[in-house]
Amino acid sequence: MAAQPVSRLLRRVLRSSVRSCSSGAPVTQPHPGEPSHPAVEVPSGRRRFLREHAAPFSAFLTDSFGRRHSYLRISLTEKCNLRCQYCMPEEGVPLTPKADLLTTEEIRTLARLFVKEGVDKIRLTGGEPLIRPDVVDIVAQLHQLEGLRTIGITTNGINLARLLPQLQKAGLSTINISLDTLVPAKFEFIVRRKGFRKVMEGIHKAIELGYSPVKVNCVVMRGLNEDELLDFVALTEGLPLDVRFIEYMPFDGNKWNFKKMVSYKEMLDTLRQQWPELEKLPEEESSTAKTFKIPGFRGRVSFITSMSEHFCGTCNRLRITADGNLKVCLFGNSEVSLRDHLRAGASEEELLSIIGAAVGRKKRQHAELFLMRQDSPPAIPSISFRDSLHVQGLRHRVSFSSQTVTLWKGGWLAQIPLLAQRCLGSGLPQRHYGSHLDSDANPKCLSPEPRAPATPSGPLPTSDQLTHVDREGQAAMVDVGGKPDTERVAVASAVVLLGPVAYKLVQENQLKKGDALVVAQLAGVQAAKLTSQLIPLCHHVALSHVQVQLELDSTCHAVVVRASCRARGPTGVEMEALTSAAVAALTLYDMCKAVSRDIVLAEIKLVSKTGGQRGDFHRT
Image (cartoon, rainbow, N blue to C red; front, side):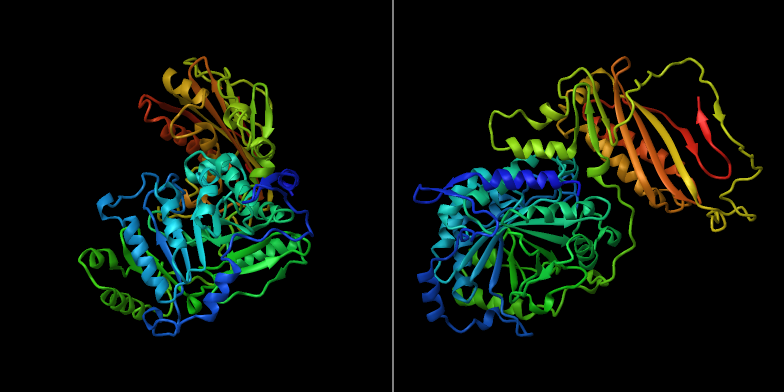
């Protein structure tokens, strides 16, 4: 497994770490097989009191199908400090004016009302809840509510390490941390921001403070991170983690496509090929997760099957948005404003009537549009980032797996240099990025001198008609059913003339948007895999390898892109290579356009192709 060294280092570092409990006495992390320290929870005396004095469940929170809603999710803010591609458009979302958001007192008032009626679990969400300044005070006030057993929070982890000690003292019971990749550069690509190191520190801090299990939410997206399933599961061998794989779900702005979804059954099959002893644990009442455990592992693995096997029949959740609207279903559009009634002076009985009416209208299940079949969607070939993605500088050759090891080894030491400075060659005279290690050939600057013609190295019969046009002159896809499968390789290139200002920022990795070379590289890999969806008459090709390199040329302030694709089949892969190079070049333009519009994309061309009946081609 590609990330096995990362897992071993994680276990070694965290197993030997020393933490402090509330009494100040040192406590060491237990070894596998030893009992773990209990998670932060409601004191046993309080639990006993709640059981003995439990009141009949409120009719206001029971819907027409008999579902009792004892779990309330409260959004503290619409803002987020990340821009995850599956969650939010890059430009963000229109924000509600601050005056229209619930105040701390209004949150406490509504929470007290729901708890009084039978809610025993509250989870704080966002946006990103930990960017709200009074989040610790909110947790402390909720902790005072008699009858509330659990206070949880779902966070992206960026601010977690800093705030968690205060949150724990305030009464925070459980933590869910969102993390979709263990590759730092891919993290930056997915969330459009930096912060991988901070999320790692947050997970470490949660384990250090005794939270067990620490839930790690991973949205699985085909072609992006489904190749990391085994790496995530490997972390549970020595760490008290509950890695929760979430089926990719539709939200406004994430350009949802069912082909991106990896179903629960497909993920489970992948895991069982590596760990056939994987065993299913009993499901808890109203749980959204199907939980499994590998014998001998400290942690566990769960699947949130919102799309392939919905759990509407046992749903016990209600949601209050940051501006005070009650949503009885995450997928529904129906909302009722509790804020407006609260500010208009509505009595407790009036609020309960409004809540009860909304709960009573809750449907049996969410919209049929979102109920996916249980079988897996068509597979889209994926290139393993761990196996093929590497970063190369003048003095360093470090794979992303090695970067992760470096990060975990020193991730909690202030004196460790930033990852970008240490591993990506920031500040060096040149930077060179490649999705696979290759020769050190230096790119040549664009020259006005005439180019030598392309040289075919084998038979290349000409055609007197376009192959994608039928006899009636209509566009048509070429029938390749009768062609033999052969090994196909194609290489394409492109040049991006940045100009001196943008070039310097890219060279030193100082662009506000992030690392332009890494993002362009990932975009090139993605584009190669999606060529048939972009070019109408291209056949879908199961690529066996994609390689994207970007080299800086200081003589003309340019970035030279070189993309290589390989497959075995009846049709060539030159379109995949050309698309990869072109999209990588376009991505560089997008990353740098705020600095300069005087950027030129040039020399997008096929460099070579091999395989196929028409013979090989090499541009000289």
